[in-house]
Image (cartoon, rainbow, N blue to C red):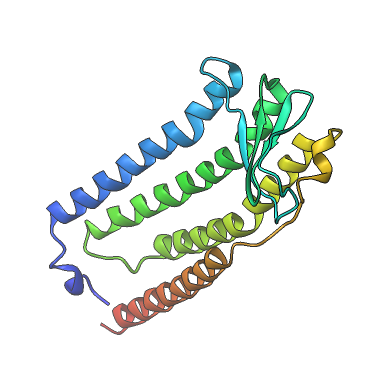
Length: 204
């Protein structure tokens, strides 16, 4: 478990991957966190639409309005607000911002793992912990984000005539759950690799 298997990983490869992850961090931070916050504060035009799954509850394509909110669609609908107040703007962007924050955590941990390749050694204790945290973050994506989306949608239609038209259902994201399990297995593999490396060095 020495650095030899990684000798074909060049410095340019490392810099390219690190730059790509850095760019991804910047884009997610700007589009997923900064811009939505500016939309909430009023510095940019506010978000005013939430995609909702209607499950054939609304069979007419006509717009159903209640106060400042309206609902359009038959199966994949749009919940729109003409002049959303501060609370409504916050509820509209909260699922996306939460998702973006988790993605930032994942990307930053991946960037730090890439930096360890620069020294030709990926099987280190820090990477084991990082993979474990990434697995937890992906599991949170699978469980928390759908919950935030469900709760905020319920709050947005609460007290309006649209509440009976928009079904409130919580569904886990199966692919994310599977990915989290695979990452947890990879973290265990890293832990075993780190232990074997330490044992081998102890015998030398």
